Image 1 (cartoon, rainbow, N blue to C red):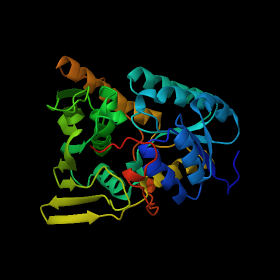
Image 2 (image 1 turned 90 degrees about the horizontal axis):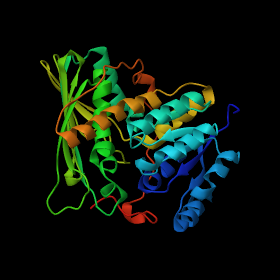
Image 3 (image 1 turned 60 degrees about the vertical axis):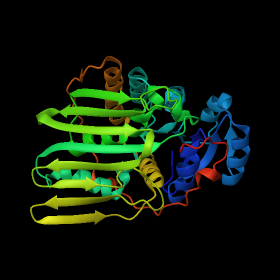
Length: 371
């Protein structure tokens, strides 16, 4: 299908903040991918973004025609997650590859449908876990799995920001709220650091007085893993920014901050404390969205299956669904033991130079996320 020097042609499905601020600028840093189309229901975005990037815009009503047009090879699906599913399924059924923003969907049933559709399709699907290609994160995960930090015992994390209720994230229920949006980061991090899948989940949430979110805006989650390993994380849409995690093993303690975010000036950093003292490991900022796209396009062009596949996304989804049940019932949820054979590998780390990121004020027809 592709010659050695050809590029994978992407259509961006939804021109919201993440597309405009990160993916569309970032893809230009790759050497094997190009932006070819935009799918949007906003005529202002259709005109201005198409002109800015010199691409063709398509309406959602014409999405099926785009998939059959021969003008694209892959889609980057960045709609609000509660409407991911129809665009993912249609692309897979048409043989178009899918780079899917996390979390996979807004229900476990939809996630299962996407996993099944990918297995039926000849197309590839990768969940956009950008940190699976960020050098500092990859180093921490591979060192943890190698045993450098000893027997891993517990993990704690916080990830928070102040989100505007008027933004799409602010009024679309649990699956638009902080646990699927932000909690996926510490959840995915600890699953890969431990190299295990959780077997027990408990969550407690609160709603901040004076805020109008239609979900718990602050949530604390506790996870139990095999081998009596424990993890806790707290996420919030109603506080000052917070972003850090601590991993404790029998040989070392790791404190990481920044650890989840992206941007031209954000380099992941971690401090390692052992009996011999403390050492800080700093990493230069990289183009995280370009990195993940470069990797996925390489998988497409060379017939390899991406590491962060539909199964990886599903394994996070089943925990997110368990958190939802725990918040509803007040009870802990037991999960069936599962094992994933694939994990992040050292050669997934890439170091593309960061692209210039537009500010929230420069975004076109977007209700800013920040309150």
